[in-house]
Image 1 (spheres, rainbow, N blue to C red):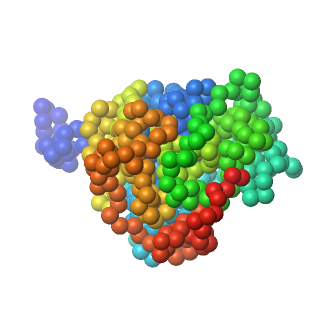
Image 2: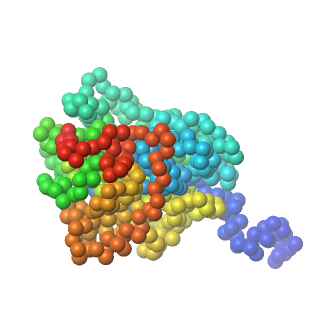
Length: 498
C-alpha cells in the first residue's frame, strides 16, 4: 500500500488510522522508569519547604523539571504497610498488612497479586531493584505462579551504615537502638552510597529495551548518622527547631496516644531534658542532605547516559517523621508530620516546574506510572492515575487522601481539612487554612458536625483483619480494650515520656 508515493507497511497504516503516529511511537519506544524510594523522609525538603534551612539542591532541580505534589500522603505511617500498599496498589484495609510483619506474599490470597514490578515486566520491561524498596529484609524469592520472580535483577540490598563502637547518645533502655551523630568519615563508607553507585552503574550499562529501575535509599531513617561535611551545613548555633506547643496533647483523645505507645523513639520531654533536641534535628537534616546528594549522583548518571528525555522519574518517601511535634519523634501517627511525604514526577508527559496542591496518595503511583508509560491499567489498583494533574496541576481530583494505621484508625486529608477517627470512635479535626500545625482539635465543636459527616464518608467501609503473623507496631482494639503488641493497655497507664 502506498501513500503520497511512499511505501507504508500495512501495520503502520493501521496504527495511524486507529491511534495516530503517537500510538505507534509509544508502542515502539516506551519510556523507562527510574523509581527512587527514600526512607522516613518527611516534608523537610526544598520543594515542600517543611524546614526553612534545609538544603536539598538535587531534589530542587528534579522538582524544577517536573511536578511536585505538595499535599501527598502515605497509606500507612509505617514501612511495611506503606510499601506493600504502594507496590501492590492496594490499601492496608484490603491486604490486612498493618505491621512490620508479615510480608504480603505469605497470604495465599496475595501470592499472585502483581506488584508494579510484575505489571511492567508483563508488558515488556526489564525490572531491577537495589536498596530498600520492599520492606526489610529482601523478600523471599517466591515465584508467582503466572509471572515468575518478583524482580528480574536484584541489586545490592544496602542496609544501615555500620554502627560506631560506642553510641553517641545514651538514650534510655527502652529506646536503646536510637542514636545520632557524625559517622562515618566519608560518604563512601555509607551503604546508601553503595546503593547509588549500583544504580549509576546500571544507568551506564542499561538493559536492552525499556527498563524499570528501582533505587531504595535508607537515610534519613534512624540512626541519624552522616559524615561531618553534612553536619557543617547546619551550624547548631543558628539551627531552627520545629514549632511546638507545650499543651498540644491536651485536646487529643486518649486513643491518639495508643498509636505511638511504647515505641523505640524518644519523646520530646526526654530530648529537652537531655539537651538532645537540637542535636537530633541537626542530625536528621544532615542525613537529608546526604541522601539528597545520592539522589543527585543517580540523576547525573541518568543525564550522562542520554536517558533523561525518555525516562519517567518518580521520587517518593514511604512516610513522614516527627521531630518533636505533638511531643514525640518518629512516625506511627495520623497527623500531618507523619503522613505527608515528598512525591515528585519528572520526564515525558510531565509538566515542568509545577506544584499541585490536590490531596493525592502514594497508592496513585502504580496507576500513574502505567498511564504515563502507555500500559493497560491494572483493574485491581485502588489508586487513581495522576496524569491529569501532571498535565495541569489545577486539574480536579475526585477524592481526598486516606491514611490508615492499624485496624480502625484512619485520617482523611482534603486541601483544607484533616479528619481523624480512631477505632474507639474518638475524633480529631483540623482546619489547615487556619491551623497548619494542627494545634487546635475542632472535633468537639458542634459547629463542625456537618463537616465531620462530610469527611467521614471517605472512611474505609471495612478493614481487613491483620494477616496471620502480624507483629511489630501492632495495635488492635478488642472488646473495647486497646491491645499493644498483645498486651492490653489499662485506662490509667500514663503515656510514656521516654
